[in-house]
Image (cartoon, rainbow, N blue to C red; front, top):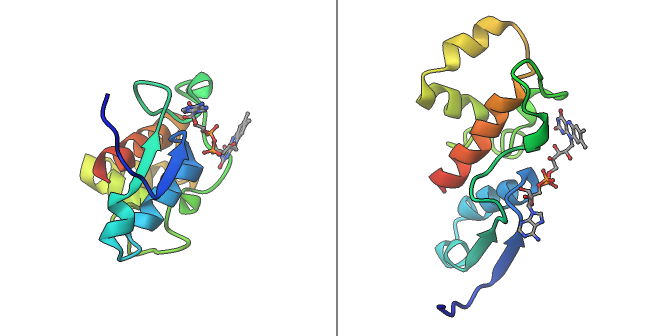
Length: 115
Ligand SMILES: Cc1cc2nc3c(=O)[nH]c(=O)nc-3n(C[C@H](O)[C@H](O)[C@H](O)COP(=O)(O)OP(=O)(O)OC[C@H]3O[C@@H](n4cnc5c(N)ncnc54)[C@H](O)[C@@H]3O)c2cc1C
């Protein structure tokens, strides 16, 4: 076991703490970012893992992702996730603001691994 000093300890990698982690990453304080630890009980990150049926969509707009309303130019936006995964055209052609839940769940995993 290793001992590490932390300034911010966040329990659970759900949307709330991932949004906090992104805000800390973008705060301009490398010391704060380095002193932040986010712990998740599951081996992977999924958004409400029991609700990831292939046809199920989020009830809210993708614009309410982890960061857009605070910082639309962030590299952690849902749109940038889609762009990096080569899925942006497909999403735009769906003609909806409501992404599939599995896609939003993949976005959370992508953010966590991109931090
Ligand atoms: C049925 C339902 C449908 C919903 N639909 C939508 C929707 O369509 N759009 C929307 O925006 N919101 C929706 N919501 C609201 C939803 O609660 C939020 O979107 C969001 O999931 C809340 O984020 P959170 O980070 O607070 O918690 P959660 O998403 O619950 O994440 C908590 C995380 O903490 C982890 N965890 C828990 N305990 C521990 C522990 N002791 N140690 C380590 N890790 C732990 C969990 O594994 C999980 O990863 C819905 C809620 C419900 C109940």
